[in-house]
Length: 177
Image (cartoon, rainbow, N blue to C red; front, top):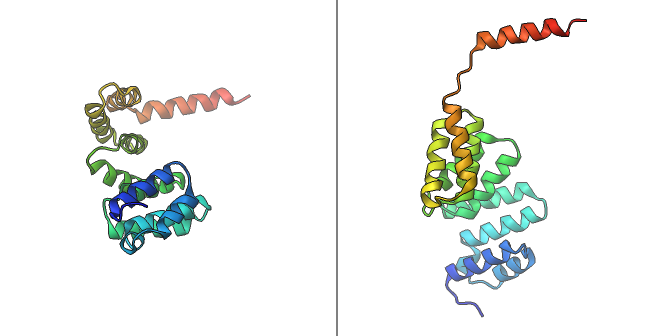
């Protein structure tokens, strides 16, 4: 039998979810103490189970309930960021990734995703800052180093609209038979 400590249940359930054992996580939640079921862990597990069944609307509702109970719940923040990212809602996704990036210890993968979204929106300076934070935590992280190099290069890019228009006109003329 598991310890009655809600943190132990949360870790156990997270381990089951990590292994994609959604039925086991649901069973563990059902046998958990009442404060675990009604707390952030309960809402989060309900969301993960719903998401595994393809019910993304219910999952989102559960994750939002989780954040109401625990605003810094890493799992709920990550799942919401990921769902919004997949759905093309970059602004909402970036907000959740930003909240994750503010937590300690740093979630490296969430920070890298956040940095990529920042670059997609032309926020290169903020992306550089995020990549540097990752590299302070993990100095040998190759992907972070590559992303940092790209973001720094983007800071120095100059886009001349007049030159671009001239190239477009020239290309249109060249396409005329």
